[in-house]
Length: 482
Ligand code: SAH
Image 1 (cartoon, protein in one colour):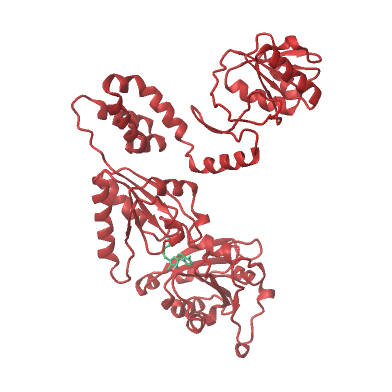
Image 2 (cartoon, helix red, strand yellow):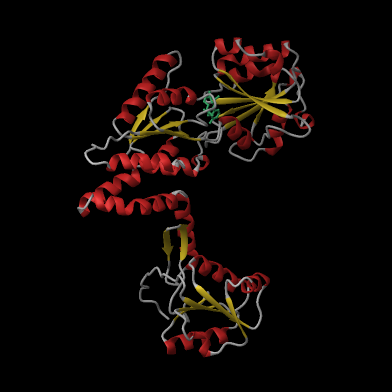
C-alpha cells in the first residue's frame, strides 16, 4: 500500500469490543495498551503466553481458542493481527476488508487499514507520531526527542485543567477571553504549582484568579537552575525545560555559551558575573534584580555554574525569595567536583584509596584561614578544592604541616568538561610551583588524594594529562601510587 496520507484519529475504545489475533509477546504488548484504553478485548489464538492466560483467568480478557476464522470479527470495532504467520495476518486483513472493520497488522503497513502511532504518553495528554509506515524508526526517534521536551507533569496539568473546565467556562463565557486565560494559566504560576506537586495551592490560586472582581495579580516565579560545569550535555532535562520557558535568565559568568544557546531565544538575558572583591554589592544587586523581575510577573531563571547549592550562594537567594513570598523551585546541576573527576578519569572514592570525599572552598585568604587543616590532612580521603589559583601554595604547605604526605598525588583540572580542558597531575609538595609554571587559569579545581594518580591511565576526555614530575625532586611513581 503506498500511503497517501493517514488521517489521524484518537479512538474511544472504552467498553468497545476489540479483537486481537495472536497469543504471543507482541499480542501481549498490544493487549496491555488496549486494556489501558478500557477496551473489551477478545484474544484469538491456539495458545497464550502465561501473562495472557492470567488475564483470561482474571476475567480481564476473553479467549477464543483455535485457528483464525472470519466470524471472529463479528462485533469488533477494531482488530489487531499480531501473529508471526503472514498467511494468518493476511486472512485477518482480508476479513477486515470484507466486514469493514479496521485492522492493524503489526509491523506490516501494507496489510494494515489503520496504524498504531508511536506515543508520548502524558495521559490524558497524548502525542501520537506516525510516518505512515514509511520510516517507523524515524518516528520513534522523534518520539524520543519529544519525551525529553515534554515535562512528565503535563499529565497532572491536563487533569487539573479538566477538573476546572466547567467552572472556567461558566466564568469566562467569551471564547477568546477564555483562550487567553487558559494560555496564561498553562504557562503561569498556577501551572508551576501543579508541576511542583502543590495541587491545593494551585486550586487556591486559580480560585482566586476566577473570583469575580479580582484583578489577577501575576506573581512571578524563580527557578534556580544548575547549569553544570560547561558541557551542555550535562544540563538536566528539567533545567533545559526551565530555560525554554523563561522570560528572564540571570546567569553567572561561569555558565558556558553552549548552555545559554539552549535557552529560549527571546528570553531576556542578564549576565550577573561577579568580579572578585565586589562580592557583596554584586550579590545584593542580584537579589534586587530577582525581586524586581519576579514582582513584575516574569518567569525568572537564575542560572548558576555547576550546582546552585554547592558554593553557589543559592541558599542566600532562596532566603531572599522566601522573605518576599515569591514562589521558587530548585533544579540541581552537576557540580564541578563531580564533572572534573569524571572528565579527568579520577574516581572521587575508590575502595583501595579513599573512603570519603570532601568538597572544600578556598577562594580567598579568609576562607583559607577558617579551614580545619587537621581534618583536611587526614589520609584516605579525596579533597575537591574549589578555588582561585592564588592560594595553592598556602594550601600545600598547610596540609603538609598537618601531616598529609608531600608525595600525595594531586590533579588540577582547568575548564573541566569543556573543549579546552587541561589536566595537570603532580604531587602536593609541588602544587604552588605547578600552578605557576603551567599558568593555571580559572575556573580550575584541585583534586587531592591517591585517586588523583589514576587520571594518568584512566583519562578519556580531551588532551592527555600533563604529568608534572621533575627529575630533581625524584619523580613520583604515579602508576604505582595508583
Ligand atoms: N556552584 C559551582 C561552584 C561555584 S565556585 C559548582 O557547583 O560547580 C566556582 C569554582 O568552581 C571555580 O573557582 C572552580 O574552582 C570551580 N569550577 C566551576 N566550574 C569549573 C570547571 N568547568 N572546571 C574546573 N573548575 C570549575
